[in-house]
Length: 250
Ligand code: NAD
Image 1: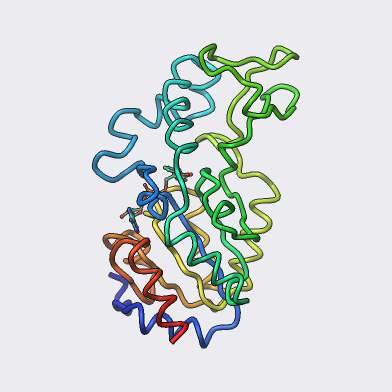
Image 2 (image 1 turned 180 degrees about the vertical axis):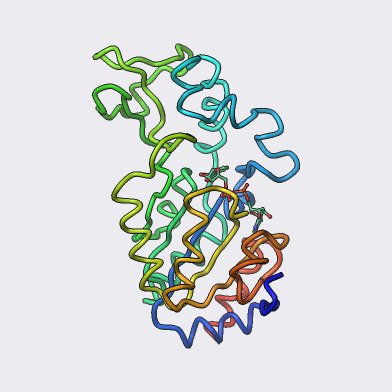
């Protein structure tokens, strides 16, 4: 743990939330695990079957799109079946109460939006959208036949989910909005991210450098806990966040 970081209870976190006027959240795969979407790094996660450098780089996709579609089809099946869990709803409620400026999410599953969150920065894109790598035209999911992968646009370009592969830049708007939230919040709630993926993992340090307090909720301490976290809330997001909200209302 960061020398000065300490564990926090849902009740104490509710108190902190009450006192802070400019709160933002940074979420990762862990917040959607209880919705049935495995994260990548935990035991049983997708990286056990699909090595990232073989399946998740833009280079791998261009070189052998049929192979990479093995992972993409599986992700699509899992993501389209998933529904928001209580942690997603808690963040939507926090925003509706005027307590949350916005969410920066590394997730591509659209579950924050499905839960009712309005200000969601899609740092890594959204797997519900599909785009041509050549002409950048959008393709509605319903128009695509997943039994015929790889998929090609009318222009001949490769179609891929509108998500950021390793080796691709962060969308300009996503980066701008994420930087703005991180620079202006006074409390950053980190939920379900290991902090291993760059450049998203610079955001907590950036927020802290701009004066924000950092609260982290993960199952176990991470590299963020050791470096930037002020308060650590250990445990499952879907169980803890309803507790935080209950305390906030009482
Ligand atoms: P990660 O897999 O590296 O880390 C997940 C973190 O969440 C871990 O620290 C783990 O302890 C924690 N966690 C697991 N279950 C939890 C729970 N129930 N409650 C609270 N915490 C829990 O995830 P990452 O840091 O987001 O990096 C993975 C990358 O892969 C992201 O960039 C993301 O784009 C992508 N991804 C997205 C999805 C999705 O959209 N749902 C799923 C898998 C991966």
